[in-house]
Amino acid sequence: MATATRKAFGMALAKLGEKYPQVVCFDADLAKSTMSGLFAEKYPHRFVEMGIQEANMISTAAGMSFTGKIPFICSFGAFVTGRFDQIRMSIGYAQANVKIIGTHSGVAIGEDGHSQMGLEDLALMRSIPGIVVLQPATAKETEEMIEWAINHQGPVYLRLTRQGVEDIDMESFRPGIYPQVREGEKVAFLGTGGLLNDCKMAADELADKGIMNPAVFNAHTVKPLNNEIMRKISTNYQTIVVFEDHTTLGGTGSAVAEWVSEFADTPRRVIRYGVKDVFGESGTPQDLLEKHGLTKEKIVEYFSK
Amino acid sequence: MTAELFQKWAKITPEIRKDIIKMITNAKSGHPGGSLSMVELLMALFAPEGIMKLNDDVTSNERDRFVLSKGHGAPALYATLANLGLADFDREKITSTFRQLGSDFQGHPDRARLPIVEASTGSLGQGVSIAQGIAMGYQMDNNAHRVYTIVGDGEMQEGQIWEAAISAAHKKVHNLTLILDYNKAQIDGFVKDVMGLEPLKAKWEAFGWHVHEIDGHNYQEIVTALKDTHPEKPSMIIAHTIKGKGVSFMEGLVGWHGKAPSLEEADKAYAEFDQQQTIGL
Picture 1: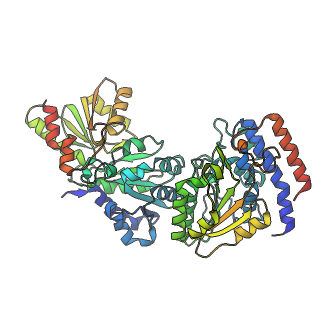
Picture 2 (picture 1 turned 180 degrees about the vertical axis):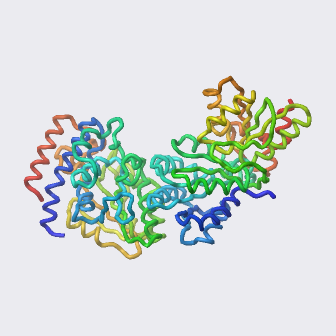
Picture 3 (picture 1 turned 90 degrees about the vertical axis):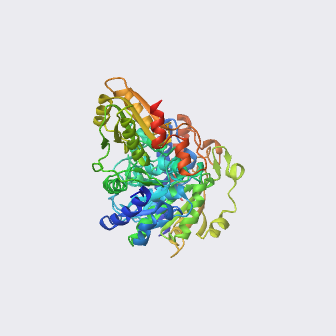
């Protein structure tokens, strides 16, 4: 069953709120969209509606974390990371124990168009020292990440999808440790977020056609990268392709390319497969994903050339 | 609080001002004007017989808290804490290491290095929201302690200040007191010319705050305003101050916002502080 990771987040936080009484939740007039409303219904006195004041929400949550509470702050990824200085100063520099939830990532949100699309959020968040940047690929993984984030002391950015994502059977979340979801050789596909399932299906089809036999990993951690995993992947595979519904400038693909070019034992090619330095636009999610090559069919087409 | 107490404070403030000038002169950089203007406000808050209920344990919630939203006034905060013996650092430490590599006494407050400063500020406009967050956290736990924050007048041009002005009133953050260090000058000129704020009292009242307008160098007026809080509304104290207060050649001048004095100028300032200490109020 396809569940949006934003919905999985809302359900998980509402569930985990019982076990972790110090968790509080903030939203900026999008509680119905980010699904933080599920927490609000259950714990109204631990939910703070901030209205359309993202900057104020970020700094207020930082202050509240200084009293020992663990605030989750929720908005569209584009809007919350758009208030970069508040995250950089009030949360990042202060090492505030705040968890930032950015939903509606990528062109996959569809009709609302560019203004609502989180397309640069990973690039922004990744540049702040000490912050952990994560992107779950399934509902189950989302819940695991939420509980991990609650227990982690320090800022976390979690990037979530509007669209439903398929369940994929894989090992439980451990930061930096990419679960392998398909065996293969020579080529490694690093899928992220809502694209993981398409990557896996594309790899199956490419193998069926005898074009290539890619291994597929779930690259759920954008920062910090795990050296052991990166060394394993860059040693075992000649070509590494990172798929993301995000600009190719500064996202997961960039993070992997930077690691490989600096630390890999053997020179390797890294392909950053994502939104190519252009703005998003309105359209159906399917049309937009196709336009940017982010579907199983388009991935197969690209690698069949 | 009595006249004798204020007389006692008036003997300490020249020492705090001396340390501010020492720090900035030694570092060859910093913000003397806006540090000197808020010394009486900090004194009334932090002095042992003053307004804030403190606790040696800075991780405890059983205490009032202070956030310096105008982070460039950091020398005044460090010097107040050191002179009142409220922290594990002394006057020698802050004056010799301010703005030096590896120092806890950064140019602007850094909570990660120095938890007693409560928040990392210096990018203006965020401290009121941070203070509001602490106050709301206290309210959630039925903790009656208060949170204080000092904001600069130039800083009040930031949009986020007005977001917090809306939210703190809406959320009834009555345990929050915002103090405006209204010294009338910012880097590019006088506030009224750069981006005027008036009518301030009417604006904050219209936003739903409990507002006082006082002389920010008069202890009686400061403590009266700080004590007069409201059961539902957050408090706003518009404190009229003098930029560069206590140094005759700095007072009221835009040019001393972010400039270090020369050694000769510093000596002249120290002599004025010594004289002020002899005279008292």
